[in-house]
Image (cartoon, rainbow, N blue to C red; front, side, top):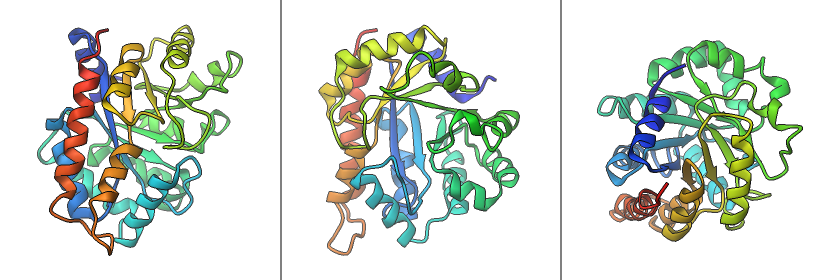
Length: 275
């Protein structure tokens, strides 16, 4: 499969730098603001954009992203509207890879076959569905691959060499390494441990390895980018977004600038890392 994700990593490899991957929840705090943020991210330095699919029970996510999902749901965001958000983004950007990240339930309710048709048409490049293990590849992973979408799998500190081949078997696009044992935003990534883990994963796959969970600062992003093919930042961006909202949880004039300011600083840290 050759698509936007593969093309982006090929270009980054030629440039000798890692990818800066951002995560924001679709519809947080509302769809209009969410679209403005996503549109602004590439110019801020985002190489790949992950968009969260709002869900009521996000088991892998910490308080910040849980709250973001609830704000999005309260603003009326649905999976259909999330796809519309991507369509609106694609009207002005047909090159930045977009990955939907979330849980299987909303996709199952939507209907897998129709979801894959609509996701491909909307301009989605890949899926990260954190609660579907390799044993359930027939549910979504294999149909997604047949539809031309990358299925990006998570590897964790507890994914040993015996388990890795199963995790990587049908993975494409990149491997998402979860740097901590826990939920998003709960701890800081340890660069030395990440370096060892990335090297171990690369012994099993030629795919790029991006590292997420626990990267909150420019220095941390820079350090991780020295050891991995990409650094993923979500909770830190979501925290800045939340802190910009008014007392009723609505966007203010500072919301988009605050998030983009942090994204720009993080991107500079990632892009400055020598490979």
